[in-house]
Image 1 (tube, helix red, strand yellow):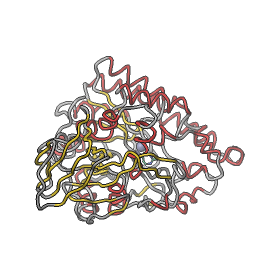
Image 2 (cartoon, rainbow, N blue to C red; image 1 turned 90 degrees about the vertical axis):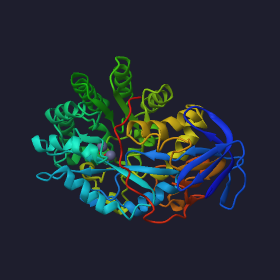
Image 3 (tube, protein in one colour; image 1 turned 60 degrees about the vertical axis):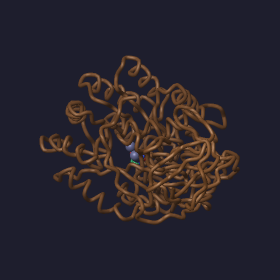
Image 4 (cartoon, rainbow, N blue to C red; image 1 turned 180 degrees about the horizontal axis):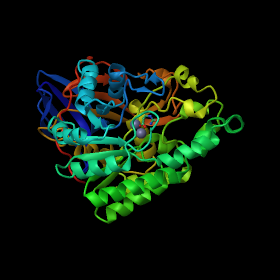
Length: 461
Ligand code: URP
Ligand code: ZN
Ligand code: ZN
């Protein structure tokens, strides 16, 4: 064996047990009560929990957005991921009008390949719907891009997909099992409300809170409801990204009860923050789409995670530092939208989910590892601890106390939405395909170690 993880408590989606994990050529070769010592390396995992490496299915590294580019590039963003116990990320390749989607994925591959420190994959993002685009989807799926993300907003940014495109994409993907992800917000009414608050008096009075006032819960709920209807009508598989509302959780639960293949993710910001952050003097820093909502929404989302109605926790990492955020200059429509997050995903969900008894350890593994791998077509290579799977693992110290500060994180962000949060539980060692890539929160791997993951068709949960 090249590496043995000794004496940890192994946690999978099925349960937990004590054992050793033997790794050879990047794969899990053996799991047993005790494996004999050999000449390879050993990681002492006594007193630790061993999780499958977390999979963050929603990151935007070096994304040109809101007049700037997100501050964590493929190199640093994947280093940060490794430090936080994430061993695979899925980013996005966004079609430019007039180009093929294939061109977008090739460009994104050229930006990421050789730079990434852990494995990565890409969702393909159609923005220019026509016959050629439609005909690309199945070919892209054959090349490992088996999920397609569509923005129901961002008209001015040229990224919006209207209902006809969404409907047709669901119809097309239902032919081969692909999945359509949606950023679900109701664009016409949203733009009307943004215009309503976009005036000097309201912006002076409410500041960054205008972002909240212009996005009531029904903006998300109506769009989710509509997308679910199109999924039901076409038989397509739908995945609602960064769901932020209690209303959304109710709609997804009802759709699931009707037997639809409709799934949703939420993110730590919707579980741990509430919209009072926008009243802080630096409230604009928290600007993200959709914005964080009320405590009742967080409580409902935690329940949906425990019940399995929401299947995944991702981060929607889109890092902007203070200087970039300062571009807003008092205008809530000019905030570079997005938050850092990939590095703190696992410790936050462990502390505030498992630690607060909102979810079990096995549920955490389902939400951060197994469900993402199954839905996104990477299971059982990733998302579990089993003989033959990739040796993507986190040796996690459940007793390690950490006070979160951006100063101790790998991200290029010079602030954190979770600054000062008290954590109990932090990754000790992150292993990506058998290589130790992070130790005690510091990156110790190699840039370029990560590979593109050619995904297969995802499973239904
Ligand atoms: O505000 C956000 N979330 N920025 C990234 C783009 C998106 O909508 O996911
Ligand atoms: Zn979005
Ligand atoms: Zn996003």
